[in-house]
Image (cartoon, rainbow, N blue to C red; front, side, top):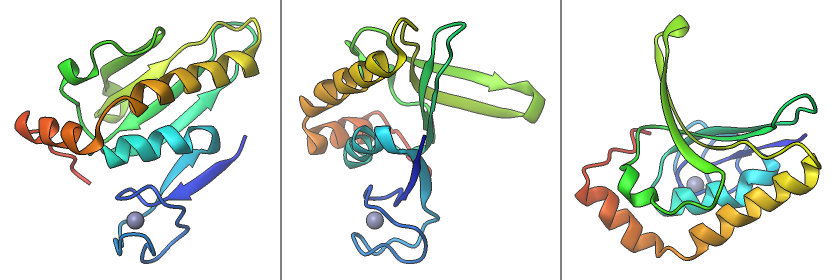
Length: 146
Ligand SMILES: [Zn+2]
């Protein structure tokens, strides 16, 4: 599966250097191509994203992960589409905390489930007003950190 490099500030494709979209010179993030749209939406809502991944398995449930820069206020993510959840955990082996928005689709028909799950999240995000969401993040003292 393919990855694309995008600007962590505005979500535009950006391989390196100064972003033509917003002028940011942050290091671009690598995003799974299928997740580009949802990641871009999250970024526009003010959520810091540091990467994403899609793992296909046939022996157990596949996984879709969107890695977040910091813990987001959970109440703002109430009512996520089914199978999507926020997960926070300590990766003790490397002493890092992992924050992710993730989903483990059934493995009956991987491609179909994955597209479906991503679509559901996209619809859910589409209902949010990006500026309103950003203000609520600010009120909750959320720090994007990137
Ligand atoms: Zn940009």
